[in-house]
Image 1: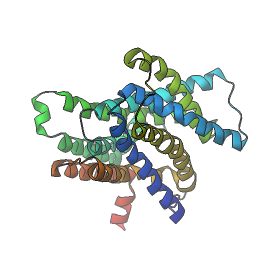
Image 2: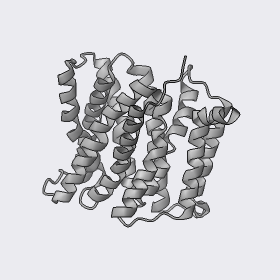
Image 3: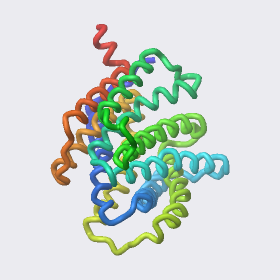
Length: 300
């Protein structure tokens, strides 16, 4: 089977996806000034649902009727939205948005390992093991040796981001095992509806009733987080998947941190030290080794 190519159109969409996903860390940093983390997660999934529902309606698709499929959507929404979004947003209360995006970049490395362990057709090769080890070394560099001295809130926040990356990896395996029979757009809508069902009671119990009397800037960031970084992002995601394949799509993981770091530096006065940037370099190397094509170019 030939490798799907990254055409100019797919490259533009890949950069756009990296921008809106990188922007999610920036938007969250703004919203966290007025809204608690769990409520942000609820906002993010709820406001994205109508956008995707309109797309489904325009395409003439019907909602699935099987309880098994909707049960799978609830699990997918928990693993791919409710848990990771909440962990990332809480983590951002303690660490910079750019640093959060770097740690979130381990998703691709975790995904290769988790799929290799749980899926028969995604065997764990030596290349993937080496990529995973490089990813762990990069994480260790980012977090620094002082982490071993004890766990404070900043360290726990970094572990929360890594936990979110692991959730994304498990979600990928779950989708491949249980959601093959549905269209990608329907899976995105069902997943968001499932995550809304999970998050509504949790956010209400922990944070209380969501406050709607927010500043205009906060509402703009919330809508950016929900519509741009969630609804439109998923449409870009599936368009790239169709045109360029999963391997090329994984490259977005390398492109998200530069956008998040740039926005944080330009608008939030965030600065990351050389240690964090060096760690990102090692994590990026781990992703390239996991992907495998960089090694093929080197051999040629």
